[in-house]
Length: 227
Image (cartoon, rainbow, N blue to C red; front, side, top):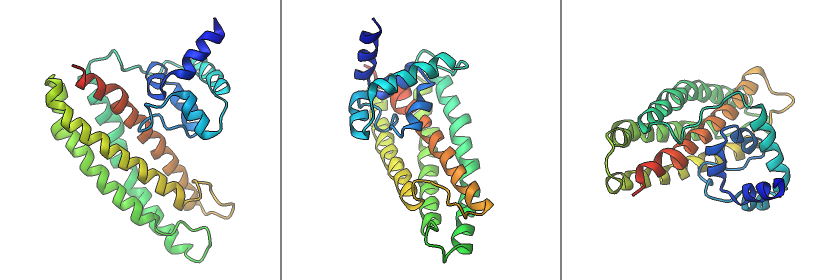
């Protein structure tokens, strides 16, 4: 029975696994498995691409679930409550956390400009990313989420949902740029306190954004567009 359950999980999509077991996001983040924009891929395919053993990942998933302190599951909760949660938890956090990280990046680039591993260009990427996110979140808060809260028909919300999903792909590209500029967010041994806080903060923002996009792409949007 255990073998059958394991094989079933391996063939499930990352998005479905994360929806059924919110603790799975910790495992996926740990192994850099994209469960938001890449959430439609099966665990088997994702592990194959990353050079990981899917059976070992399933074991980690089961361990996290066993020790989970009761992470919220949203697939059966009202759509309005999920939209509220996304705004209050994720939109608010991004607006709070990104501006000081932009300032930290500006300081690190200025003070450590002569060091070979300085993240040159990071300030500009973060500034563009924040501007993109501001526009995206405003469209969700002013247009799409109110439509979902009112229970508008699937054919009405389908087009704005498609737009938001394409923009999510762009957000994923920004995360990849940040990883590239920062040496995969590995803190140099000589880094000052600001540099360390910057990279730690960006790791947290990345994790939050992936959970945020997962809830939209794999829970909120599919329910809103179900015919």
